[in-house]
Image (cartoon, rainbow, N blue to C red; front, side, top):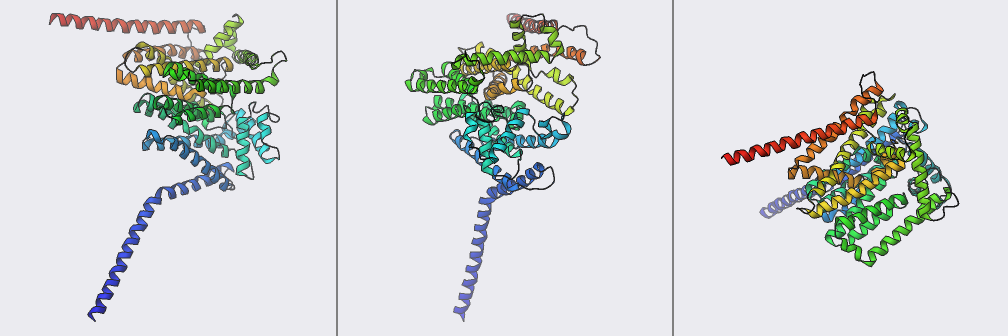
Length: 568
């Protein structure tokens, strides 16, 4: 009996032990699978929500297609994160990456839902598109996806040439729609893709910043690109810049990684970023190549340019860009323009002249200013005016018939005004002590500033003072723009560069003079200065006076300190 009692006790003990082990194992499994299960449930819920919005609140038809699209987006984000693992990114950066993607997706859904009722009633707005180019191209991509048309014809330009002269984004969109195989055209499907791809710029800007400038600049740069209005707007629409911005960041990150760490993986990433911009826009590839060469020649180890393999790769890329420009622009050029360089010069001259004409025609006050000027001076004036657009005082004061669009204008103008001010200071700060500490950093900022300002002026010359084409052209280099701005801010905070603050204040003084000038234009406000150039001149004079007062006060303080020191 005692033996049987022992056996019963042992059996009960083992059962309780097994139960405890099972509970512990289940707890471990639950903890291990908590994140994946949460992600799956979140994606399913988001798929139903997007389908509900896409169907104008009628039903959730097509939620499975949205779930597949979200799966692609998750793979994109995970793949980009894996590329950065060598830099040991912090955990908060992954949260910022996901947050940036969700912000762009949320705004894309907001445009889709609100624009049909709060817009001006254009066909693009009635369909929920924030940009007309995206409307035309996306609809053409859907028609191509549902047809029997070989998608390669989209790249060769044999069809739908007017909606995408390069064919890259049209091909990608059509292939994406065909792969998803949905039963109806749902524009938000493309927003899922663009929002995720656009968000990748966050981690690549962080990688650039960490390699070149350190953790603080990297963190600030990542936040800047995550929230920069122009990058967010483009990432929330079906535009090629949503892809080009992160590809530029990837290419620069790869180059810096190749320079500083001498790893072949960096060269591969650099080449991948550069080559992947080519299908979207060969001229954009040319601008990216110029940026990379600027960094190689000025901003880092120029010895890489002495390698034959590097020059061979550069010449191959130049040849590809020339062929792309000849192929995409050649059919529009007169017969006398035969080679890619003459075609590019013709195209730029024609498009820049047209944009200058349209910008002047769209503004009565600009007609008044530009009419007495010679053609070359009109072009110069419109170029510099385009650099400032969207201008914050104009966006704040000029009333729009649709408050929704004015809110977007103010949002974009605020972002560009802040970034532009820092971009003006960046080369000055880099040149101030070029032979001092952090020489490599300052040379890199000079190289990035050169590329950025070339891009800004090319965009302004090409897009004139247009409020849509001009900003999106220059936004292609948003990554080096925000990284330069972040470097200026951190350098100011760390190095006690007080003059940076005063330069920014002086720029603000110039801008402030245009507030009453715009009030006079758009309201009944009485103001004696009506001439644009006189207002600009007074603004510059005020900035110079402010600078002189600051200099005098500083010299006075230094003199007082030296006198006190001698007396003591």
